Image 1 (cartoon, helix red, strand yellow):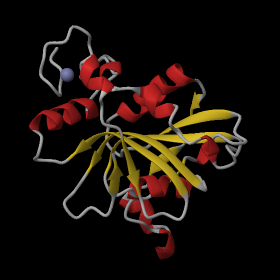
Image 2 (cartoon, rainbow, N blue to C red):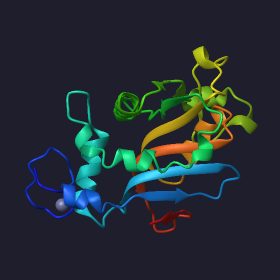
Image 3 (cartoon, helix red, strand yellow):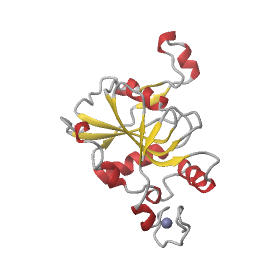
Image 4 (cartoon, rainbow, N blue to C red):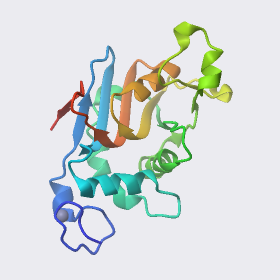
Amino acid sequence: MFCYQCNTYWKVEKILCSNCAKQFYQGKVLLDWPIQHDIFAQFLWIPNEDANLHQVVIHYKNLTKHKPLSKYLINLEQWFYNIPNYFFDNKTEIIWVPVPSGSKRFVNHLVAEYMKTYFGGRVLDCLMKIGNLEQKQLPKSQRQNIAITLKPDFIKFDWSNALIIFIDDIITTGNTLKACWQAMSLNYVVSWHFAYRQKPKSPLLVEL
Ligand SMILES: [Zn+2]
């Protein structure tokens, strides 16, 4: 296949050639949150600006288990070993949590499983989206734009000894992620995203 960035022919099945991968952009998304966060995005995606990347994102979002996932995941070690140590303090295991998408896409689950195989730990598929109907049954104070809640089986589950790492394909405003840490009552956020979708008036900053 061809390297997504430099377009040279590349024998290995990765979207970036080894040369491009070496200098590869890694971004942290900084949010105005009262809690510590380490939100990583593999690509900076500005829709309408880069048609190639747009195609890559579309392919990624529609991945199924019959397609090679690894070629889309760049420099995972570099990301993982750069997570600040204090997130790991007093933690005895890692739990990968796929963010529910509300559609029939499974890419977050596939990536969470991949991370488990790669770095250890386990996958906890403990979150679900609340539809509009269910939302209407909640008191007004508990309704949100993006409502995510624990699946009933996990209400008594204790993850206080684990480092929770969220997996989500695209981060835009961070609202979905916020709903996730609220649902799990975490006082920190660590997450991996395929891309950070930057909009013109986005309040977020990306550290290069
Ligand atoms: Zn290249």
